[in-house]
Image 1 (spheres, helix red, strand yellow):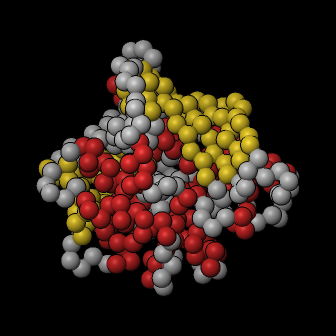
Image 2 (spheres, helix red, strand yellow):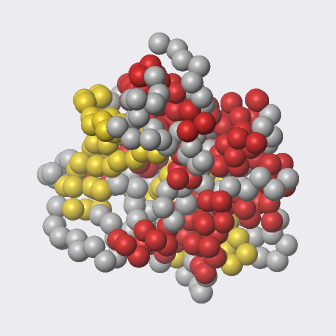
Length: 347
């Protein structure tokens, strides 16, 4: 049931740009007592993408959830993007998605229920594409609308990929280009080219499932996906969790078409400045780093690409395989080094 309702009119910020600031989350989480269990293989300690619970010697359960307000006009596309974003956490841990539950917040008295039907149809189609089963969910009446999933996946306990296993000498590979925050902000201002905006939406709808298969085939142990804290936020968490320093080559990072021009004209979302404040104490920017690139490196991404740390000799092959299986912008963007004073160095 198609509808012409524009979801963007309901929000000031949507997608992963609506996340709480990272510093605030860290302050809250560290004060919450956590019961330790031997079966909990991955919890809150490393800011990983999902929790992992060991069932037996062959199986571990991945559990994650993600939801947010609209970041595009079309309800069906919003459902697709929100679902792809939630599913991505399972893929970033090297897992296989098996089941999902809808998380729905929708103002039934203010927006035609046909809009919700389209959102749910988009989510259901993306869950099916991921090879998982949509098995129910929960709804409340709330404004503005929000949508996402609680996702369950499985992984072998010995093949879990975390964001705290990078080793000196490895190379970082990024699967998708960045710049979705700037592109969405540009759409609100009417300043982005139609094709550039659609390309950004298509990238956010693209599942990280194929990327996970490439990582599993090569035995990758360290990975994450790039979302609301921006590329540098997630790189910092990887460096801190792994006890290493990561050096990023800013000009090697792939960008969405139109993103650089938007930042150059001053279209910089507020989430970018929040992310910069978060990482600034831990990141050393070399003299001469392009300001526009700097701001894109902290641009809040929604349903972003996989970031993996891999052996130097395998990195070019892995990048090519990612390009061949649906991520044409996959690129080598940095190196992992022994820890020095700064967790991240940007050149």
